[in-house]
Image (cartoon, rainbow, N blue to C red; front, side, top):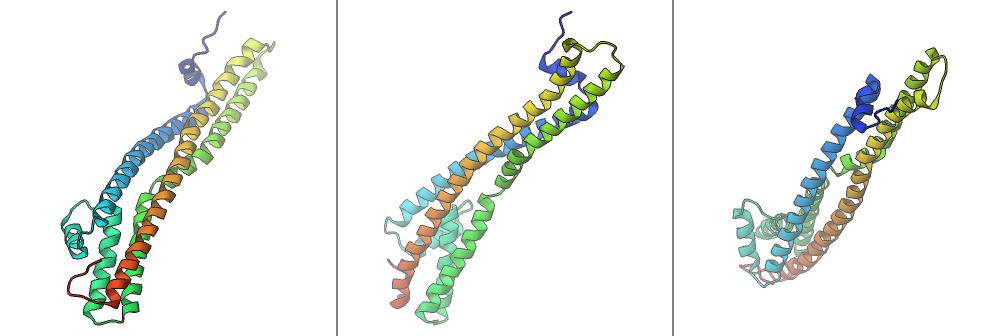
Length: 229
């Protein structure tokens, strides 16, 4: 007799533990794809907003005007928030008549702290993808081992064991490994992509901090009423 080896049939006839493993892996895969799409959209928007602000910053606009615009804007970019934190600290220390080096160091520390907070936000949920990519294959393998063990225990009551009696149980168990790989492979690929994009963004932001610090150093050496270039 021809047996039905479709995926749905194999899942329905698998043992309860294997079905539980499959359900967990499918939910994990759904969660990882949600993270992947959200992170793709978020990183694309982040790069666009940073590039827009960087173009405006180097257009020669007054720093005080940029600070005013950043403070009044609801959805400022990552680079804009780092700029605002450094600029506010610099102006605060300059009003207190601090030494030029103290003004520069304070602004740089504020920008570094802001950078770390921003990177923590950017890296959110990326670790989840790493966990899915590393753990899912082993969870699927556990389901496969359990399913094969369950299949062989069931064969103990069979008088004559043939390939037809062994194949369904093994096929049901192997579906768990397939689902584990289905969950793991996209998560690993996405994690590597996002890690590379985040590193590139971090380098861009660190370069901006150093370049902006040079501008602040000139303003600290020769303080003026309005910050210039």
